[in-house]
Length: 134
Image (cartoon, rainbow, N blue to C red; front, side, top):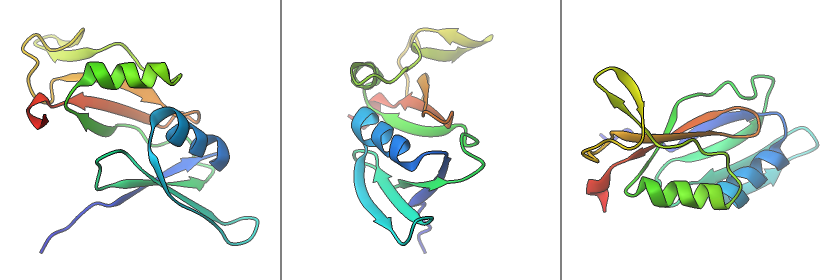
């Protein structure tokens, strides 16, 4: 039996602002935007190539989700994409023998180079490079 993670809930304070960030800036595809009354709305978006989506939910815990990972084959291209669309993406970093170090992993190994960004509410993401996925 397969167990597939397909949706992660992201608590946000403003669904329209979060939708614009993820769709227009980060580049996620909008799958669903459905309202049922004034206080209930579902907005589901999917990163390009992903089998897992995020659903935006207006919630008092806005900004509390940290450490979600996106995996890309070319982190330089991913960072350029984010920055060109106005996302405050960090510089590249890797984990070395003494902890986090600036710049890409010297060997550019799978899952060794990172960047980070946050949505307008502070939900935090890591982008991780896996060159073997090319």
